[in-house]
Image (tube, rainbow, N blue to C red; front, side, top):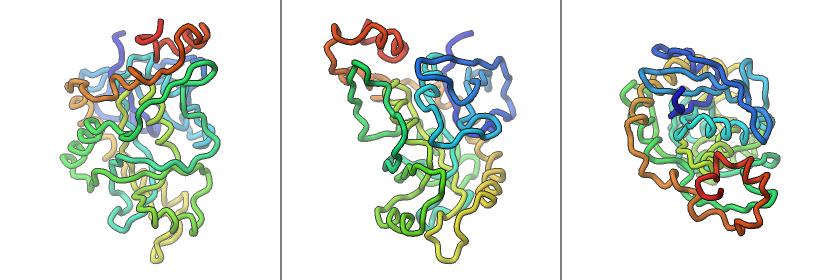
Length: 288
C-alpha cells in the first residue's frame, strides 16, 4: 500500500470514528524493541492514516514503560510525515476547565527514567528544539477544534512529569509558580523523537482535572479523569477527522522536514555500520 501520510497517537478509541475504513493491522519490529501495539492502518476520507494506541489496547503500559523510540520509529517506517497526538492533561490555570482543549507549544521536562533520542552508540546528533511543536499542525488542530465548537486554547506550556503517581500539592503549587499551563505524562518524548525523525508533531491536550492545586476542587482521581475523557472522546474524534484533510493538503515548508540537515556531528567514517543500518529510515538521506 502507499506510504501512510499521517499518524495519530492516543487512546485506542480514537480509531473508532466515522469515515474510517480499516485496511490492516501492522506489527512493526524496530531496533529499539516493540511499539506499544500494532499500528491500525486505514483510509480516512481518502487519506492514508495510521493509529497507535499509546498505552496499548486495554491501557497496559505505564507512561514510564512506553517505548517512545519504537513508537516513533514505527511511524517513520510507515512513511508518516505528521503525527497528531491526543492525551489527557491536568489544568494548572483557572481558565482551563475540565473538558477544555489546550494546544500547547512549549514543554518543561520533569521526567527521569526515559530514553528520548535515537542517537548514541557511535553517532551524535543535536537537533534544534527551541520550538518543539510544529506550529502549522497545531494551527490546523486549533482551527478544527473551533469549527467543531470545542472550548479551545492555542499555545501554552505542557509540563511532562514522570508519573505514574499524580503530583503532590507542593509540586503542583511549584509548577503553578513557573507559569505552567497543563501537566501530563507522555508528550515530550514523542515530540523530541518526532523532531529527530523529521516528523511534524502537534498535540491536543484534553483537560480532565485541576491537578491538586485548586482549593475548591477535589484532588485528581482516576475516576474523575476517566469520566471527562469518555465525555470528550467524541469531540476529539471530530477534531481529528476535520484536521486530517487539512494536514494532507498542506505543503511541508516547516523546519521539521529538515531537522537533521546540520544536526549530525559525528565523522561519517566513524559511525558503526550497524548504527547506520538501524537508523536508516531516519538518517538515510544524510548518511549512506
